[in-house]
Length: 223
Image 1 (cartoon, rainbow, N blue to C red):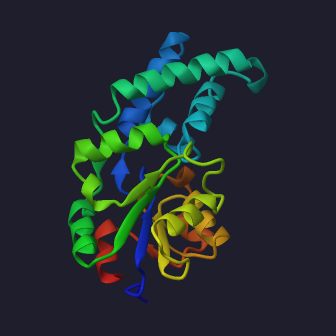
Image 2 (cartoon, rainbow, N blue to C red):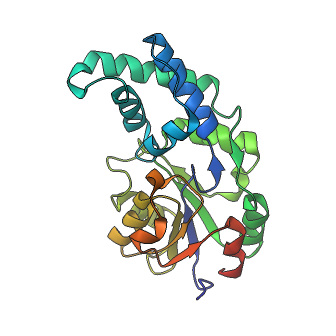
């Protein structure tokens, strides 16, 4: 199987292009420290990632507190603390997965349009792209707060297809999470799941992407 007929490749960000868990964990632990709660490990934080910043903060609090004890005011304060912490450490230890830079170069030279669809807040995307020096590869990017709906809803994919003058048939979603694969399925779009990402400690193949790859560089054999 190959996808050489595609024109637009839509990538997830965290867990697909980049590993941001060290910095997300650092920000979560700064938030928890405000409440004199013990720090979480990277392994503990990893399954909390994928639906956006607010679920990450809520799951981190729920690790220590019953849901009924997390008031609206407490959550809002914790979320602000988290955002402030993450802004100060947005790309301290975040890194690209092996093969990402070389493969983005390959896809760019092959003439594909590339975009990012992530459940990370929009304001954090560009600073990371700049720090890792990969911003020029992408025509457009949207985050969890860019539209009224986020993945696994199909709306973000429809938006990118329309914005970049593509079609569903000529577009494909690539990601590590069930949210990526379900969004693609909801948009009737083909997808590639990468097996090395976060995905709540579940196998990406369980969500039936069109294709599964184990390494980002494997995409060079598909496009």
